[in-house]
Image (cartoon, rainbow, N blue to C red; front, side, top):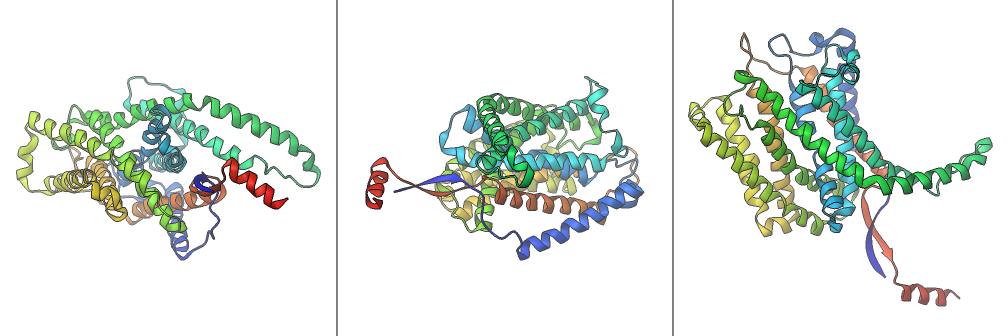
Length: 414
C-alpha cells in the first residue's frame, strides 16, 4: 500500500466561529455597497474631483490583480514547463486566481460612477487607451480562468448525476455530456493555459503603464519609464508566495498536513525572482538618480523604504536560506512578507505616491470604503472554503495499492 495525493472535496463543517465573524464582515460590507449604489459614491466614499480613485482601486483592483498572479505563474510552471511535482497545487492556485479576478471585476464595477455603462468597453473600442487594454485583458483572462476551472466541475459531476422524479430519465444523457466535455476540455487545456499566461502578462504590465502616464502626479520614487516592467516582475515574484501562503492557511484551517516538500521546492524560485525585481528597482533609482528623495524623510520616503526593506530585501534573504525553506513557520513568514511588499507597492503607487495637481486636502479612506474592501476579502475567503468543500480542489493523502497487493487482497477475500 502506498499513499498518493488526490484532490477530493473537504469533508468538514462549513460553519465555525471564524466563518461567523467573516459573515458579519460580509454583511457589513454589503450594506455599504448597497448604499453606494442607491445614493452614489459621494455618500459612502471620500472620493472627489481631485482624488477620483482610492482604496477600491489601489487595493481591491491593483493589489487584487497582482496577488491573483499565482494562477498564471503556477499554471506556467506545471503545464508549460512540465514540472509534474507541482500539478496537485495547480487547482488551489487556479481557484484563488479565479476568485481574485472575480472580485477585481466587482471592485471596478463598484468604483465606477456610471457602473451601468461598464459594457461599453466591449462595444466602443479605443486601441490607444491603456484602460481599454486592461479592461479587455482582465475580462478575457477571467473567462479563461472559469474555463480552466471547468474540468474540476465536470470531474465532480462524473458518476454523480442523480436527478430525481421525472428528470431521472435525463441522467444517462447528462452523464455522457459531462464525460464528453471533460475529455475535450482536458485536450484543449494547454491552449487556454498559454492564453491565460499571455493575457496576464499584458494587463499586469499595463497597470504600470497607467501610472507612468500619470506623469508628475506620481512621486519620482515610483514614477519610472520602466513601470510596466516593474509591475509585471513584482506580480511574477508574488505568485508563488501567494500559493504557499494559501496552501498553508488552507491546511491549517481544514486540519490537513501541509505539503512542505512541494512548497519548499516552490519557494526556491522566489529568491531569484525577487532578486531580479530588486535589481531593476535599484538600477532604475541609480540611473534616474531618484535616491536623493530618500533623504527627504517624509511619508513617501518612509513608505518606500518599508516597501523595499520589509517587502523585498528581508524575504529575498529568507528565501535564499535552506533552513527557512524547510521550516513551515519561516517559509510562511517569508511568503507573507513578500505578499505584504507587493500589496504595499500597489498601495503606494495608487494612494501614497499619487498627488493631484490642485489638491486642497489629503485623501483618507472612509469607513464605507474600508468596510466594502474588508467585506470583499471576507466574502472571497468564504467562497474559497465553500468551493473546496464541494469540488475536488485540495489534494489529500489517498491509499493506492500495487497490482501484487490488489491480487493478494482479492485472494484473501475469496
